[in-house]
Length: 458
Image (cartoon, rainbow, N blue to C red; front, side):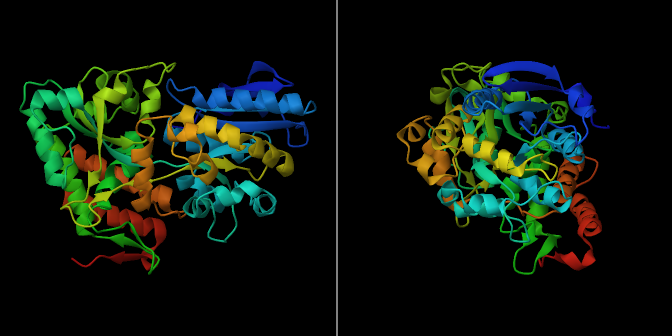
């Protein structure tokens, strides 16, 4: 399906504290030369019922334009699910007519966009920005290209674990706290829920093409990195094919469907299933275990569309165990988003000046609390408001000590799509795990070239 043209979205223009919603078609009518140098366009994802990003951007924009009367801010919400957001954002960045000046970017897509020429380095800007040193080195690296140049300011990170519903566990006679030590113990808990009087679906793991990067990161890689296998060998700088861990991860997924331990296939193939899980299935006690991220409780916060005051008493957390309980005992994947400046930004210095405003300490603390994310900043992490904003922030922040990261390489988005396809053919029964593994190997070889892959010894 072709992405929607830019003219189908809207932007919010904020000048000197006032805001007016206008059609984004106005952007398409501009040429690079026609663009107002006093206007800064800010593109970000708008999906589902969440409005935290818009709220924050409105607040900072109104303050910024009040202090800079000659400047206006155009907020460009790209209304799309994750994969479509990346596509539509790249469509905008590909032309000086439609490109934003500041873009909210997922670290996993960063190097792909750098390779395509969509983003520009901000080395000179960070050299004069004292808060750069407050950012964790791993997050700095996530926004650094293979050429050694920095292409964005990271603002958030996240970790992943097993969320479980205490009422469902009580009905099934399962313990709380729950501390599974292996995949088999996770499956046994799911079987116990299935065989109990509970009507809840036992376990949900994001899987398949409809779930996009959630399937690769929240789902598959949370399994794979618990097996001892890996996607990419950092020493040889080659993609790993034919691994036992890859096949075992697909087999785990197949077990969920074979043994009716998860939601129906049709719901896994629904790109909006996460909204259903957060707004309905968990609050109503219709799902026992969810493998997901640190941020999801923002859907239940006071003032959110799906506010659920009881969530902190109802939902428990457990680390995702490694396959057989081998060291380090648990696994988590960490990601992160940040602000970048496209190649066709009208005024790079003005764009970075607004990023500085977005990343000011007070704004960063408020944003972490509102968005329910894990900070990448030492100054924010030391703020008492951050430390106390959520009953889960300590648990998820602690997981960062052993977090794994996706291969930050230009080929990763295509490799990720191949992972999602391997998951889907196993989910649907079109292929068994061994066949899906072989097909994945062929796809990745085609993506990166035979000289950039290696077979794992079994």
